[in-house]
Length: 394
Ligand code: FSX
Ligand code: SF4
Ligand code: F3S
Image (cartoon, rainbow, N blue to C red; front, side):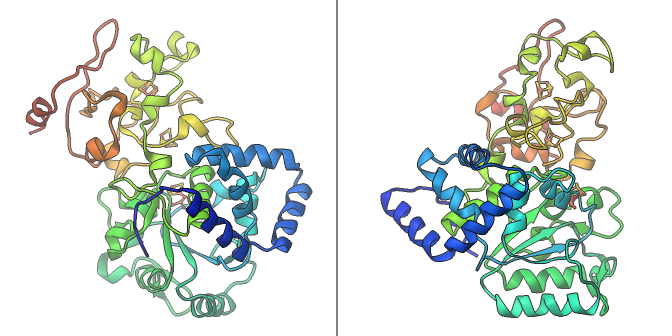
C-alpha cells in the first residue's frame, strides 16, 4: 500500500478522478443508491446537504461535492473485508446506527461489504469459505478494515477464530497482506485500546504494533461515522490514503485538538470551571477541565461534527473528554474524573491552538511535557518556552 501523503489536486487530477469515477461507478449503482436513500426516508436534498458537509469535513473544495456524491454511490469493484478482533463491536455500531440509520451508514451498507464477521447472516464453515474465496478473488484490490486489538502473547493464542482455531494474529497478518489498503477502525485496532490496558494479560496491540504493517488509523472508542466514512470516501475518490499525522491518523479528522474547537473554550479562557458534578457551573455549561477533561491532550474533530448525526458529543452531554482517540488512553488519561493536576496529568502549553499532534502528540502517548498553568481566578496558558518545558519533563 502506498503511504504517499499528497492531497494536492489541480484540474488534471480532477480529470483523473472523474475518469476513475466513470470507470468504477456505474449508472445502475447510482440509481440503486438513490432508491436506497429514498426508501430510508432521505430526499436528494438531504443527500446534497450531507455531501457538502462531508466534503467540507474532508477539507476539499466545493468542486468536489458532486464527486463525493458519486463516490458514495460506488458499489462494484471496491470490496471491503472487515475483520473483528478483540473489542466490543461499538465501531460497527457507530457507523451502522442500526436504530436510526444515517446517510453515512447507508453508504457502508451500499459499498460491497464483501465480508463482515458481525453483519453476515451465514455462520460456520460457509463463512470461512466465503472469506477465503473473497481474498482469492479480490487479491490486491480489496480494502481490509480491522476492528479490535490483536492479542499477541503466546503466539496470539488468546484470540482464536473459526473452526480451525486460527489466531487473530495469523488472520490479520494473512488478510492485510493481500489488501490494497488497510484501515484500522477504532482505538483498539489502532493502538490496542481497552484490551491493551495494564496489565494487558493477552499482550494486546494495535495492528501496526502487532504486525508492523502500514495502516491508516481511524481511532476513537468508537470513532464517529464521519471519520470512518470520510476516510473511506477519500480513498475511493483519490485512490490513495489521506495525509496522516505521526500516529497514522488522517489529518482532516485528527489535525486539531478537542480543546481548540470546544464550545466551552470561552469558559476555560475566562476561568469558569465546573468544580463539582451538578453545581451551578455544570448547569451553565462551564469548562470541565477541573473535572478531568482531556480535551487539551486529544486530537479529534468531535466538537465540530459530533456523533449520532450531529446530535451531541461527550462534552456537550456534560462529561469531560476521556481522550479516547489517543494511544493508551485507558492508562495515560485515567483517572478520568479527577482534576488533571491532582491526577498527575500535565497538559502541554505554550503552543496554543497552533499545536499539532506531530509537535506535542507524544505527550498523549505518555511522555510528560510542559505544564499548563491555571490562575486562581482566570486561566491562561503559560507560554513557557519548549526548552523549559523539556527540562521540566525530565
Ligand atoms: Fe474498540 Fe471497536 Fe472501543 Fe469498542 O469494536 S474502539 S472497544 S467502542 O468498538 O474496537
Ligand atoms: Fe472544553 Fe475540556 Fe478544553 Fe474545557 S478543558 S474547553 S471542557 S476541551
Ligand atoms: Fe472521545 Fe474525547 Fe471525542 S472522549 S469521542 S475524543 S470528545
